[in-house]
Image (cartoon, rainbow, N blue to C red; front, side, top):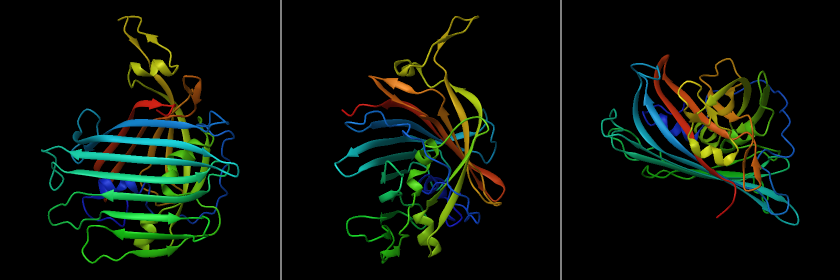
Length: 332
């Protein structure tokens, strides 16, 4: 998806540079954020949320049909949100960790390799203004391919008022650390994308937007790169992701013919896309229509499924899915 990435590593880097396509020229005001935020559940101690996902990557060069595409990799993805309270401020930290392993019979040069991404983003709970971010992308070496593993850090604002980002290709010989000044006004970071969308109005025929900084593209473009993300809510879908959701308030449904009991999660289909004529394929996120509730804690608009497609020119190339497998609202 990222035009600055030309190698076959783009499938994994796309997960770390979500929706890095082309710059937006339309300066539309951001939509309002929810108050309270959908994950906020305890004003006295702060909130906690852990979401675990199964990752599947499919080769779609032969067919994009769900029953005909070929799975070539699997892995895990975890988002952990912690709200930190103090006498003066409230900040939310989201940690992300992702690991993907390609099957031995996956197309070259990916076969048998494992790639990982970790990131941390911290932002204010009242305005969602990002304070700091750090991300590490660790890619396995591929034959005849430059290794694009990197580390990027950013201080959007702190006690030293630095407003600076750094970037370093960690597996390229003689690669120097780069620095870039950051804006002094309110920013969102690319790592916040799914949370910013979740914190705005979601429903059938809804339309919201927010602006975010993409630091990977900023350093590759040699200038600060921001994108306006348009979020459109569509029809209701149902997802069967396992009986475990009954512990979070999802009601049982019994098939009248077979008597089989299932626990379908009602979700709103949401499309996230660059607000530009050349926007490329969207990210699709299915957010739960009803809150997940457990142990007296209630979290709204849980992202149950995240998926996106990639193309080489106009030809389908890869399709990636993240499906929710577990969640927890109490820190162990």
